[in-house]
Length: 311
Image (tube, rainbow, N blue to C red):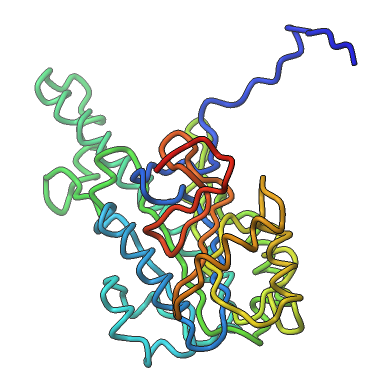
């Protein structure tokens, strides 16, 4: 086949894309995530997701806000409390208008950041004007109204404000199998489609706060499993041992990526040799610093034969 290059028709990518816009350590997946943890009861889904979020929190610290949607939060309290979750961020009824609450949280965090940013800029301008001397009395009165309570620089809610960034939002949905939230709730399905666009900033700043979602399920595709919208928009999966070969094949077809399905099965078998171990598949892994998108648990990269890269 003959080809001919047209330099005037080259596609140009936007400089500030909101896809995976949050900086993360080299060993962790990109953000924002829509991560699925799939395994039978007692396999270790909650522990795996909690530890993944913990690793992010070790880097992001108090700049990470984690929301929990789980009817069994009480039984997992000790495990989840390590993440420093506020009680107001725990929703125990998956079908109690959870999508609206998550959207509101993202919008509120955006508004709080923009208000702090506005007041901080106002403060800087006020100090600059004081040093230069007031020539307009009305302008001085306007400044003073902003600080009638006490005159000091506004304190940031999160340290990331000082870097010009909003907080990182995570939501973990656990033990919601059988609820409408993950199967027929249209608002939740729409949220999964646009989770990284939640809390949009107005022009000219653009971008959004966004929210990463971590969803635990016992069934990937069978009756009572995840809706197709969630499956098709997921960025990674934590896959535990299963005896359902039909569903495993469906999962392999969805997450095999650039390798053949039979090679995926080999990686899966190697990763799940021991109880509670799992195969982690990252569809958008960092090719410049991560040797593979496949891992045994989170700490061991699995590099398919024929790949010249070495760990």
